[in-house]
Image (cartoon, rainbow, N blue to C red; front, top):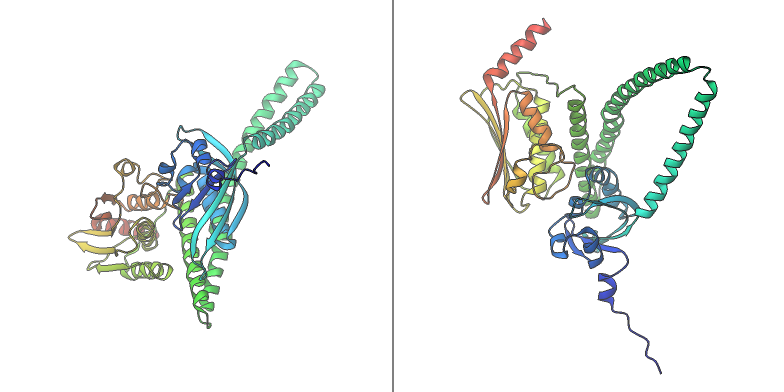
Length: 406
C-alpha cells in the first residue's frame, strides 16, 4: 500500500509561491522566507537588518506611511495593497501585499505578518488597457482634426494656436493645483485634526479602563505625528514652489513655547524620558512657531531613532551673542554615509526608520531662514543636533520688520 507523502511545513514556508515577512512592532523585519529573499536579491540575514520601509521606492514610502500604515494600526490588517519593492540591483518589483497584526491578550502588538505576491502581469495588463484607451482617444482627436482641416496653411495655424492654448492651460492648471495642494493641507487636514485632538481631551475627563487610556495615548501620539507630517509636507511644498519658509519675527519670551513642545511630546510618548534644560537669559528675536517646530522635529527624530531606555536631552541657552538649542540622544550612531545626506528631503536620521524623512530637512531650512545653522554629530556616546543663531542678526531683522510695519 502506497504511503501518502507528509508535507514539510518548513519547506512550505521557505519555498512557498509567495513571499512571507514578519515584522517586529518597530517595523524591523525579523523573518523572511527564501522565496522573498530570491525575489528581492538580499539574503535572509540581510533582510533581518532592514525595515519594510527601506525596501520601498520614495512614492511607495509616502503612500504606505500616510495611508496603509495608519489603516493597519486602526483595523489590524489590510488586503491587496499595491506596492513597488526595490531590489538589491535597483530594479522594481510590483507586488500585491496583505498584512495582519498579531497582538497579545492585553492588546500589545507582537508582530505583523505580510504575504507578498508578484503583480507584474496584472500591472502590465492594466497599463495596456489605459494606453489602448488613450491611443483610441488620440486617434479619434487626430481624425476629427484631419476632417476639420481644409488646407495645410489653415491647419498649421490652428495647430499652432492649439499648442499655445494648451501650454497656457497647463500652466493655469499647475497654478490651481499648487493652490489646492496648499489649501487641502492647511485647512481640510488641519481642522479635522484639531477636532480629533479636542475630542480626545474631552474623553480624558471621562472614567476609562487602562486599555482605554492606552488607546487614547496611541491616538494622541498619532494625531501629534500627523500634525507634524502636515506641517513638514506643507513647508516642503512651499519651498519647492518658490514660496520659501516665511518668518514672523518677534522679540517675545521663547521658553514657554519650547516648554509646550516638550510637554506635548511627553504626553504623546509617556514611556520616553525627555529632559529639558533652559537658560535663556536674553531676548531671542525669532519666529517662535518656527523655532518650536524645529525643536519638535529634532525631538521627534530622537524619539524615533534613539534608545528609548535612555534619556533624551534638550538644552536651550543664550551665550554671549548667540542662541543655541541642541537635542541629544543615546543609541546607535548614524552611519557616515547617511551623515552626508542627513538634511536632504526623504532621508531619515539613521540607517532605517519611519516617517517621510522631511523633519530634519525642514528643521535645517528653518535654521537657514533665521540666519543660523543646524549641525549634527554622532558617535557611540551620543547623537546630537545643534541649532545656532546669532542674536545680533535676529535683532536687525526685528527692526527691519518694525520699520516696514510703520
